[in-house]
Image 1: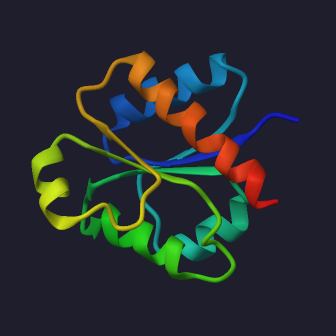
Image 2: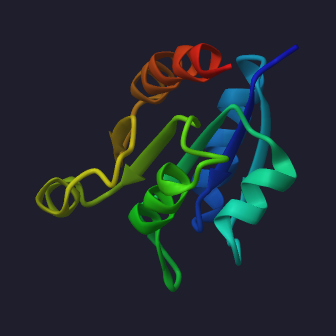
Length: 125
């Protein structure tokens, strides 16, 4: 069974690129440009890994990460934050994320973060 990755990214081009790359690597991917309630979305999709853009329209991806990590039902999920503003994120903290990928990113950087985080998902089971 392939791992399921949930991506929340409001840039459609980046979301499409990430989805295609991850699907080519054999992962099941659910890509969203918006979500009303991150815990509800995670519970509905049951991902093994969550990838969040840091700056979303009207939503702070870091805060969404904190919600996931603070919830007893979802705290075990690995979360990767992706941002074009790494210095801002570094000054604010990582919100409990398991990895960070700076935009623009290479496919190797993206896959390295995914491979680093997926063993965390398996260990939590």
